[in-house]
Amino acid sequence: MKRLKLTKGLVPSLLFCVCLNGFAAGETKLLWQIGKANNDTDEFLLAPSGYAKFTRDGFFVVGQSNPKREWPYVHPGPRDGWAGG
Image (cartoon, rainbow, N blue to C red):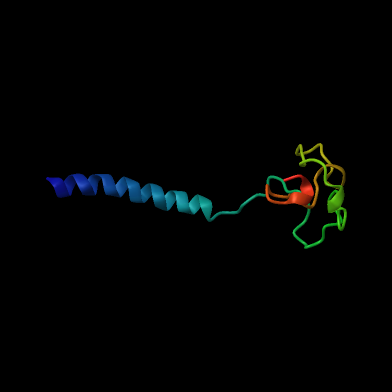
C-alpha cells in the first residue's frame, strides 16, 4: 500500500515539473531594462567619472524616468566612505 501511495503522488508531481519546464524553456520576453548591456556608462547619470558628485541613491520609474538624469552608473555600498557610507 505504501508503494501505491508514493507512486500516486509522484506521477502528478513529475507531470507538473515537466509542464513547468516546458513553459520556462519557451520564448522569454524582456519586460524592461535600464540601459544596454554594452559596457558603456555614458547613458547613466554621473558617468563616466562623476562618481565624486554622488549625493543620493537612484530612483527609477519604468516608462517615465530617464537614466541619464535619474539613474547613477555607480551604486556604492555601506563601506564606500566617498559616498557617505
